Length: 80
Image (cartoon, rainbow, N blue to C red; front, side, top):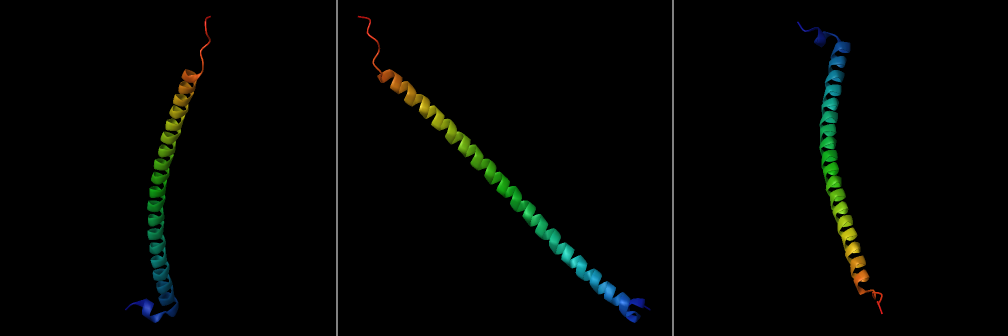
């Protein structure tokens, strides 16, 4: 015969154990979802950073082209 059915304290402990186990399972699932979301956020941030670095490079290249064009437009000293 099962002693749990006869002892209310043991029965209560079993119910509490089941409840805690279910809650821990839910917390573990939430944690897995958060870890997955964090991974996606990190990947997006890496992509944004790469895009910003590319834009910064393009801007720097554009600035160099503008400076070169301005240098070409400036009057050259005459030799006469």
